[in-house]
Image (cartoon, rainbow, N blue to C red; front, side, top):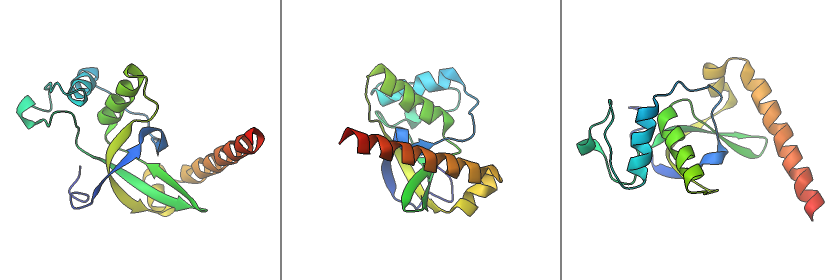
Length: 142
């Protein structure tokens, strides 16, 4: 959570809907501690003491919400360890739908360009292709 998003309402977004275009650098001990916390057994790490932990939950992750051509897309650039903890928990519990506690920041493609440069255009082209493929699959199954 950042100073800019502290006042935003918390929402839950499905993990699979959040795009993470920048690969993370991870501390696996920190992820282990977060997974343990999500399971209801608070465990401290090098950056968080046990007494600062709320059992069963992690702090919200800042997530950008972009509307483009009638579709909603979610992007995140921080919260790497929290994302990995949610992902690991979903794999361990064989859960398809993990909801991520988030603070939603309204954004545009132009906003994302600050983080991604001109590659933002190819990212949205790829997303449009994926959406078309999903639509085609849905049409064939009917």
